Amino acid sequence: MENSQLVADVGQLSEGLGQLPEPMAEPAFIVVSGLPGTGKSYFCTKLAEKLPFAILESDVLRKTLFPSPSYSLEESARLFQACHLLVERLLKKGIPLILDATNLSERYRQRLYNIADRLNAKLILVRVEAPAEVVRQRLEARQDDDSPHNKSDADWEIYQKMKTSVDKISRNHYAVDTSRDITPVLDKVVRAVRR
Image 1: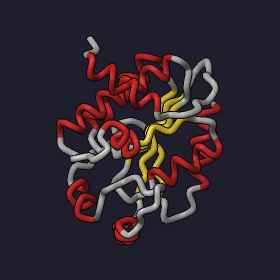
Image 2: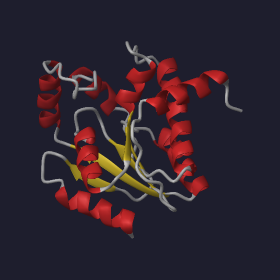
Image 3: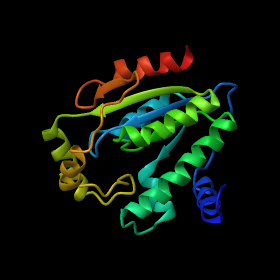
Image 4: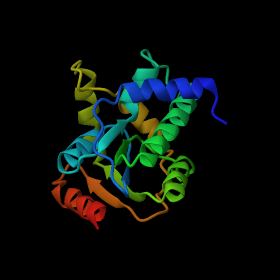
């Protein structure tokens, strides 16, 4: 049973999505996981240049619902409950999706697996990583960057805290190190979508 708060949240998130790609008979659902600063959003942006997919970026969606986010457990629970329902609704309409979120816990990823399995969507998993020193430099540079492209509030301290909660992805997935050439993995994902 969907409560009125959840329905309102999903409506608010939907409004902020802008132009959606053309529906497909069998939409793919690409789930991108990784710690802050590893280059998830960069990878998703490059992927969307090759595939006409909608990107659901958790940092953007959070600020749509919570303009001054607290990152509390309650806030995150509300955000991801709305994200999951939004994913389900879009996939049901045939909209191909890229979900850009940390997705560090297998327990939370399981919910995404269940949605894909239930809707018979082609699920493609990507783990994004980068060497710790590269991540540290990126996060420090991000703290000084007040451009609208910088959507994350995560810093090095948050990265270190979150690093302890990374679960291994139990299903087959692609791994990409964004400190290197990402083209081979982009090409593999594109091929997997078109297969």
